[in-house]
Image (cartoon, rainbow, N blue to C red; front, side, top):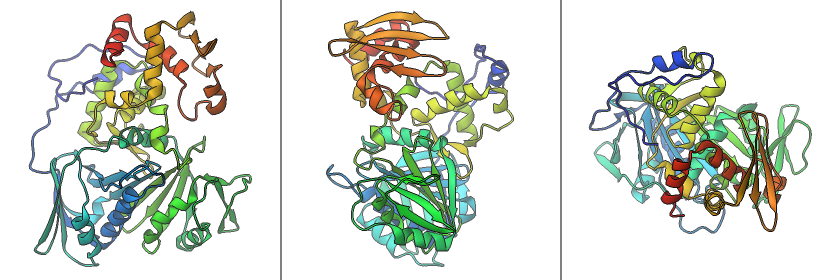
Amino acid sequence: MDITYQYNEPSTITKGKNGSEIFLSHYNESFEEKEVPCFFWGKLKEPYTIARSLLTLSKIVASNFMPLGSALRDPVITAGGEKLRLEGFSSCCSVYGKVTILPEALDGEFLQQGTTNVDFNTEMIAALSKINKGEHVFFSIGKKEFVMQKQDHKVIEKKVSLPIRWIKGMATVQLLSAAMKEVAVLDKLQIQLLFRAIPKGDVKDDYYLSFRGKKPALSPINTKGSICIGGIHRLRLLENLRPLAQKLIIYTTASEQATAFQFELSKVRFTAILSRSFWRGFSGEGNTLENLIEDIPEEWMQKLNTYAHINEEFSPDDPILKDLPSIEFKSVATRLSAMGLLGFDLKEGNYYYRKLPFKMSSVESLNPRYKNALKLIKKGDYEWVKNSDEETETKIKGSGLFHKVIITPHKTLCTCTWFATHQTNRGACKHILATQILKNNTEKELKQLLEEFEL
């Protein structure tokens, strides 16, 4: 779907449940983006804390926990909601980092919401390393460059392409973040004790965080109420934040597929999210695809996308959004997140707009399960058993036998070995994906999909 930002004529309202029509009527407004010289320019009130945070982010991006080639230093920078956000992944995509610079740490002007992707090269890293407390440091962030200036010294970083292996990871992390719950809050002393407890060397097995009184303890043994952390040695990337951290909040998902560590610094937040399996990373998750192929009225997508772009940050509790049933809001917001159009703030529980520089088809084309699902459809290796709003059932051809797929509003099942092993923790199997694609697309749309992927 191509997202546009100009609505000059009233569009036909798609009827939904319990107030969808009211929801759509509030979004029928004209909006057109204008060219500006930069998204933000101004002075940093907390230059030392911001510099240390950016150096830690660069350390994450340069790290690699699998032999996948050269390291990167390419943060994605978003200006919006009176905040600056810089995001990045480790080269293996198993660690996600985000620096959120809060309004009280900035003395400048936001001219427009915008996102860019630059390369923090050696000169930028060296300049950040020399920033001390109380210095005068200025940032300028535009569509094509990022500028940092200290006294008479200026460092300029130009826009670069977003690394391909980050594409799926960026979308996946936002979906996981929106599903996370706070599970622990650590004070300054507890943060020190936690880092001292990290075992030496690379840890291949899961470790579990629990508390003996107020003292954090790490163990390879799972106990009731403990917090699962996979590849805990990756936490050492954050050690430089310990002296600056006032508080550490830990979040996790019900499936324990990821754990988030959010450090509250002075007017800055640093968030790190670790995938459970450090050898696979976030780009190996398949949940993004399920949200991309879900059948959602395109008009809802357009309206919420425009609302997000205009308001820059929003919550499901916004008065206008309350007119949309919660289940429908979640579906639309999840879909936009999967398309790289929304990020999620763990602390505030808000979504924020940031349009990543890639097309939705890029996410789909990078996932082999999606391609394999389309191949099954192309070959006609399926049989319809039942297809209604209450229940969908198909038989999809496997290796020498047919697998049964059942989809209802409350459950999704498949008889293949992938589903038996992973359930839905790593996204849908190709048989479930094929059924969802068949259910959500007309014959004409299916033909277009197959042509797009040259199948």
